[in-house]
Image 1 (cartoon, rainbow, N blue to C red):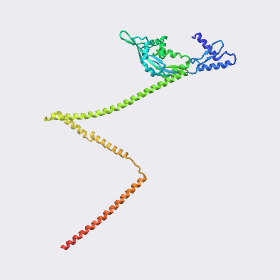
Image 2: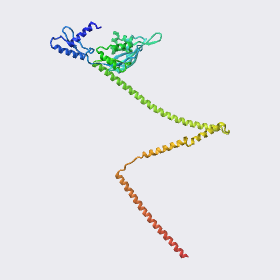
Image 3: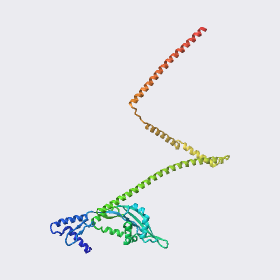
Image 4: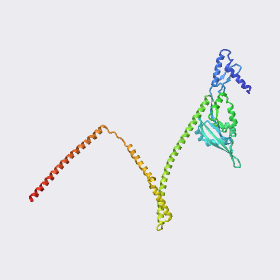
Length: 400
């Protein structure tokens, strides 16, 4: 049921939007349209009567058009974890530079008890040059045990007026307990639309929820809220990209380490094979010296027979040696064909080709001239030999 105040508010709003009686003439119709426009904007005052104060139009009114529904992650931190979020109106660099002083100041705000210890869970930048600091407080009991102060109890302490003023002096603008929602709370949030959001929009948001187990609809009213969510989304995207860059660098480093490790493993395998062969040779020589002068034993004869059998199997044409020879021949053929295919074809310039032909022609002419000289020399040598033989016959006739 609506209380009388809410009922009067609805009546006044309806009067301001439909039937103002402020001026008593046709200008009231123009004023009604102006009030409707302000209601659509979600800002301004709607005057409708001389005796009743104007209606304040806010973005939560049902006529505001600039509203939508988004989705946020359902918190999964338990109350026992004791996580409380503090929003500072300072940059992250300033917070990190003064983190120790900040912890000491929070410890003093909590009363400075020696049994309490303030711990920082995380520091993160949020839009508008603000910083989110998540803390938890550990309480030690006299018997030596310790526990975290529940998040709701710690946040309630921070909400006390005197404590809140001290936090504001440190630059804290907001404190939030990081606690999960119970099924009853989630059900109540889903059943009751937020202020200013129509049930139709809220029901459609519940239908469009991509992951009901992890996400819950939230209202976005006005451009300011939309801009805030856009900044948060942009910041989270940058954080995700930064994390992806770190993961990519780690993967590249791991791939390099893997390649180095694989190379070392291969090197160690080769070394192990070499050492195994050396050890085998040493054992063979040692066994030969140990069995020197002894007759061949039955076990050794059986081993020799087995080795001969294995050797004959290896040397069989259809066994391993034949297959190995066949593979080697195929590899040689592949290498030959690959070499033939890989022969490079060169293109010779026309002028250079003419110079080469001219040079070869000169060489051929020189060879032809040399051949003619050799032929002439051979003819002269034949004449000389013939003349010498004739002189020998003449001398022989004279002496006879």
